[in-house]
Image (cartoon, rainbow, N blue to C red; front, side, top):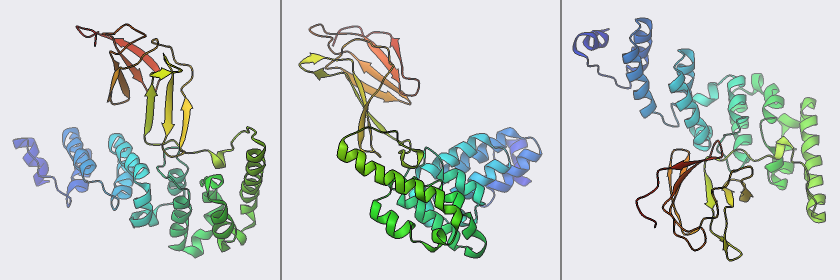
Length: 289
């Protein structure tokens, strides 16, 4: 309360790790949004793998949308370390753990991490939790696991073998792995089921324009660092062939500056939004370069 009064009269407040959460609760109760916002900013800056789950649940409890979003992104981005080191994760309700591991934005290169996280959570209270293996197993992209790991570590694990309800997802995975081998040998395309779809990576590499078959192109390709795969960006309006240009990235916008469209140098500047996949023409430079 002294901190609240200091802010009311002096416009200053001393926020630290020991008082940030209680101060936020008090500021919310007394309707002092400026103090609550300062507390949220402080908590954002103190996020680490040990406290991020607690801050996420705290923000959700007090409807701090900005802090909740920030903490959620931190958990997803640093999931490997969070899953291995966080003690708070062991106290999560199953619904909240399931929401995390099912996220398309979960930052894991190997689904083995997700499986081991589930085991760590269940082993914290196996008597009451092992029955949740059925729902949690559906959050693992089992089709992306190494075949030997799936057969030796997942298929034969007691939590899986003892619970008959696990059979549907296990059978689906076995069928996919069998079909994958056949399709690969016959060089055929097939629809990838959800159990084998790569999660959305945190980072993409964009290749825009350049020379293709000795001519400038307007082609845009992306590299998925997690799936180790290139793909062409479809359905994008063209700004014309472009080569020898330069690019810069601000937020989700990629700025394409200058270059050539054949033999002619350009002064133009365009921005490509990586989320909406749209181009926007911007003010040109004073000279071609």
